[in-house]
Image (cartoon, rainbow, N blue to C red; front, side, top):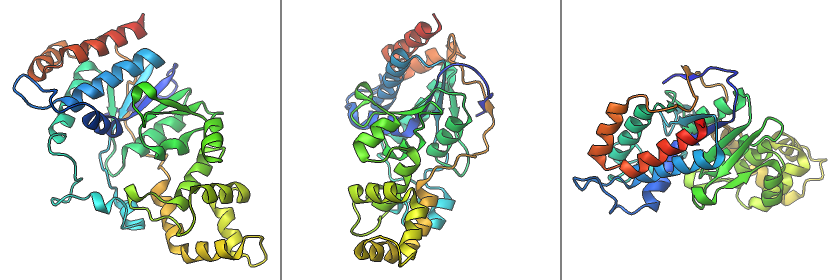
Length: 312
């Protein structure tokens, strides 16, 4: 589907869609079903989150960013362990069977509502989010339950993350000050460098053995960035403690590869899309069919109410 025309005014909200529907699936009971008994907990939870976000934060523009490739080849080539533990028997992502059909319903409802949905072959939603976020103009709110996208935080550019690790209604606004207070790193770039050192077992990133989060943050802050830290490790005359130097040098191959995996691509080729919030459904007839088929009346009405309030 098409990327937004540059220069359109008004706050932009970018959804890390998979993060939201996975969390909705696990947060809303599977007893929430369509009239025929099919689970629609992820769909209902996603739509209710969408309605809350639009009502609370009042974006003028919104894009649901999509994983067209959840494990891109360029990242696997750099680090074969990347998400390897999540690969299912069929080679795809090992996701709950009851969730997969619901993702298609979310796609259909977004299209009927007229809300922009953007993915790119060979890239993850994180890369789509990053590309749209840096294009501006701000302000930009990135909505995610994953910490990976903290690297996009940039107060000057007006990019912040609404982190919904504890749920959308308890989302924390992540700014550079928040990063400094929580992690001891004052920029998104330093967060990414810290994440390389720390690692992330949930993504198959081992990190540097013996260097935890606090040490990683202190090292990145002291040396400016990962490149500066590695230069210090290579320099016998630097003030880097011998133990830390040894750990970094032992992990040199990993440290060469991991930034390709951790850092988002910010130049994804995206087609044009109208990201303005719609005044009403793009296809009212189709939306009504979906509402009836899947029992989505209350959730869809909440979204429509939120959209109407934004246009008021």
